[in-house]
Each structure stands twice: as structure tokens, then as C-alpha cells.
Amino acid sequence: MPRRVLLLALVAVALTMAYAAYLQPGWESYRDDQRQYIQLAQRLVERGEFTRAPVGEAFVPEPLRTPGYPLLLAPLCATVGCGHWQIAIAQAIAFGLVVVLVYLFVRRLAPDLAFAAAAACAFYLPIAYYAALALSDFAATAVMVLAMVLVARARSLPAALGAGAVLGFVTLVRPQFALFPLAAAAAILLAREDRSARERVRPVLAILAAAALVLVPFSAYSFTFFGAPFSSSSGWVLWNGYFQGRGSDAQGIAAFRDRALGGAADAEVVASGAGVGLDPVESVQAAGAFREIAAFEAITDRRAQAYAWLDLDRSLARRATTLIAHDPIGWAERGITFRSIELWAGEIPMRVDDFHLLPALPRLVSMAVQLVLFVAGVAGAVLLALRRDRGGLLVAAVILYTWFESIVFVTEPRYSLPARPALVIAAVYAVAAYASSRLGYQKARAARKVAA
Image 1 (tube, one colour):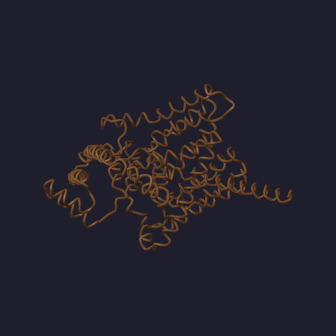
Image 2 (cartoon, one colour):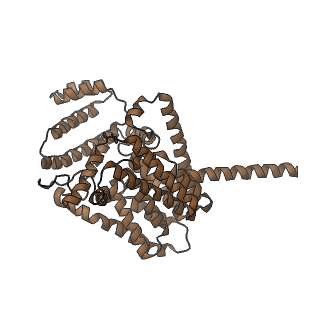
Image 3 (cartoon, rainbow, N blue to C red):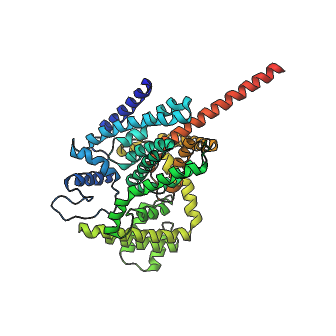
């Protein structure tokens, strides 16, 4: 391993630790999923069960979070403790390893660009910011990069099984990637390689089988307690995603909610909804959702709340599906525009309190820079896909899958974090391709002048 790559890894570690010092002691406490993940990890150690219920209380199944990230935190809890500083230190080291993995991946894809891609990843501040927090997004990023390296090299059956197992674990960390093994399999089958397509089918099947097997224990857990293969918050995020980008009149929405909870008739609900830009169908569905959410929040029993969450999530999914069918064009337009921009260009890696004090101009500049990175990354992904190299197709698959899967639901910038290393790789490739084409053009132009 070149020394300069190890120095980049140290830069990644240092940036993460700097963010940890900046974020403590609050650690962005408004992100309550941090507390939930730490609780789940602690209970795995203390009880040997996937639950948030403390020792001594009755077991309550977990309806919202998946076990991947708590499984990664559990060894910390069992040894040095799983406080925020311990997690930040461990994830800082993991970020350093991510930089090394990016270098190894790109070295096979485009050797001349391996160091540049690793450097771009090491200095990419959003990754360091999330590595300092107890969120599953960074963990999914690290595991995804490892999966990319393994899938790119998976030619034998054992290698394919290992790659598939890691892909399956990505889903346990972030369930949005449940179908990504299919995209990875497509990348292998579409790649232009010396081996025939038939010879590639065997490792593809091994990857898919291993990914599925990793999910079996959690699926059995979900079936046992909830009667479904995968409990999640898909209905909640689909519902909120429908309204994302519609604007927000906080006072008007609060008044609409109060009328809905006050038992207002449909005619009054529709009239109130019109005041905040909702048509009659949207008003009726939103009022019903507000009532269901209020009923859920009134539940105090921990076990009853777990099962009520699934009922609420399924109901919100049905309501969201009704609204999407009612206005598919508007929903799709907001996905391609507002939700995409929020996903890829809405990140400013700083404390939320500092973010609210930030003037408009720096926010706009940050968004513009991130949009340029996104456009360059998509362009690079297309160029890499056209090469039909397995690694290039994997980069494109990670970016495009994350984009189109995410914009179906409500988006936050962190939801695209697992694809950011791939985006950086693709952007570096696009810039290098552009520079090479410009250089070739200038040389050709100079040659024509000499000939003239």
C-alpha cells in the first residue's frame, strides 16, 4: 500500500475526530435514531435479544430499526462501551479504511485515477461528519464500499458468496438497499469480460443466494412477531415523500391539523385544506393521517406501541398510494426536482444550530457546488457504464439505484451517503475524461495549425 494512501487514511481519521470535537457534547441530539441504535446495541449485549426494552422488563419486538448497525455497535458496547466518543473513534478508523478500499477499487478500474479518487473521498466532509455520529448512514457507506470491492473481484464461488453476504448485510444496515443485489448481479452479467455469460451466472446466483440467506434470521424475527418479512417505516417515508416540496405554511398546517383532530366534517376539512394548497382528495387523506398519528402518539404501553406502529405505517402507505395515483405527474415531478436536489445537494455538514444561523448565500453556493458534483458524477457513471467494465457498471449501479429508489420516498441528504464514494469516483473519472478530451482537442488543433 503506497504511503501517500495511508496518509490519506489518516486525514480521514483526523477529519472525523475534528467533527467529533465540534459536535460534542450535544452530538446532534435531535436525531433520536442515534439513541435508538445505541439502545438496541446495548440490549443485544445485555439481553442477547433485539429489543429496546431494558433488562428486567418484558421483551418488546423492534418494529422500526433493522439489526445491522446495532450488530456493528454491540462489540463496542461489550468492550470499551458505546458512548458517542467510542463510536466516533471506531468510525473514524473505519473511514480511514474506506479511503483505502476506494483506492483498491479504483486501482483496478482506472489505475491513474486511484489516488485522486481516494483523496477526493478522504476530503469529502459529509462522510466525516456522519462518521462522527451514531447513525446507520456511515456504517452503510463503509459496508457498501466493501461490497463494491468484493463484487468487483468475485469470480470464484467462495468470493461470490462472501460478496453476497456483505451485500445482504448492507440491507440489514439500511433496508433501502434490499433490491440492490439484483443491480449488482446485472452489473456482472452486463460486463464485457473474457468469460462467457454462462460462466458468470454461477457467481451471480451465489451472490443472490448469500445476500438472501443473510436476511433470513431477521425475516424470521419479523414474521414471528409482526407477520411480515421486513418491518420498516416505508409507509411513513412514502407518505411524507408525497408532500415533500409542496411548501410549508406552518401556521396553516397547524390549523388544518387542529380542525381534523377536532372532528371537523369533510366539508370543513376540505375548505381548511384548500387554504394550505391541498385539493379535496389530499385534504381528506391528510386529515385521516393526522387522526391516526395522534391516536398512535397517545399509546403509552411499549408493546402496544410496537404493533400500533406497523398498523400506522401500513395505513400511511395505503394513503400515500392513493394520493400518488391521484396525482402521479406532480409526485414524479417533485421527485425528479425537489426530492432529488434535497437528496444530492442539500447537505451542509455542520451543527444544526449553526446551520440555522447560516446566511442564504453560503447555502446557495453549497447547493450549487453539490449539484455540480452530482452532474459530474452522473456523467462519469454513464461513461463508466459505457465501458462495460464490471467495476464501472457497479459504480453506475450504486449511484442510479440510490437515486431512483430514494426519490420514491421522502429524501434527506444522508440517505444518499452510501452512494457518495461511488459518486466521487464517477466525478473524478468524468473530470479526467473531460481533461483528456480537451488535451486531445488542443493537440489536434495545434497539429492542424502546423500543417497549414
